[in-house]
Image 1 (cartoon, rainbow, N blue to C red):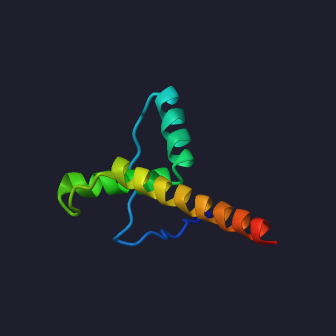
Image 2 (image 1 turned 135 degrees about the vertical axis):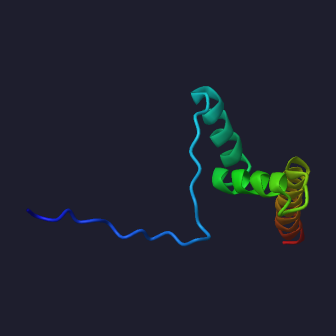
Length: 90
């Protein structure tokens, strides 16, 4: 009899996977919002789990996201201002 080939488990003790069922509409909205905010869903979920088990102090992700968006908008505004000033002085 031929022996079945087994795939090598490439995960380490530090890695794991959690699967659960979630409403498809909510899942789609979660991924869309995360994409809009430039965050990987896996990073969000891992962060929330770490906070829950006490491995990470509770953060305010919504506030952090808003601050990051404001910082991005300020950088865009500064670039536009620099461009406008360059055109005016020419």
